[in-house]
Amino acid sequence: MIKLDRPECPNPDALRRNNYKDAMNKAALKNAANDKCMYCESVISHIDFAHIEHIKPKARYPEFEFEWNNLGYACPRCNNSKSDKYEQDNPYIDPYKDIPSNFVFASGAILFVRNGSERGEVTIKGIQLNRPDLLEKRLEKIRDIERALTACHRTNSKPLREAAIEELQNEALPEKEYSFITKAFIEAHTQ
Ligand SMILES: [Zn+2]
Image 1 (cartoon, rainbow, N blue to C red):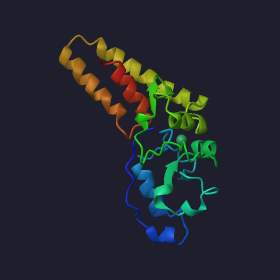
Image 2: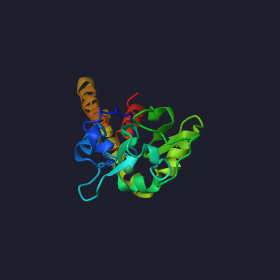
Image 3: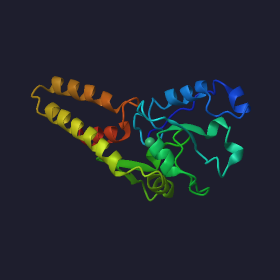
Image 4: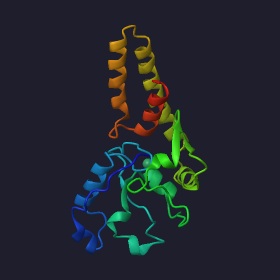
């Protein structure tokens, strides 16, 4: 999970008309999340319908159902895992407001709780951010990076090696799938 910037709401009228699924608003959220799920960073496939996520579940907080700051862009898996669970005292990490790396960190393909953070724990468990299918996809990504890093480290020329590592760092840009774990992995192995 990475920090996201919340865009201006392009069509506030739709929200005033009690429509949170407006296409323009959905597109803005999608774009702000780099076409990925705001929680698990999976690229949301064209087959799956992306969900407009209510950060505070609408079933329990109907007053926030049409509130722009309560809307996000999530994959059906995360949205369904989260369901109507929400603890006021330990809310899920909101990547539009919070800096996720203050609450969780990645080691390899796995997300861990940082410094005993209860919000980190609630988020990882409640949204199932280490679910097996997700771990498998993240591990695949880590293995690709590992192969590329091995090739970089075995390059004899220092300038070539540095250039190759720099290029590899593009894989950790926010628009790339699973950039959070990729960034951590590259940082840990290019010291
Ligand atoms: Zn997701």
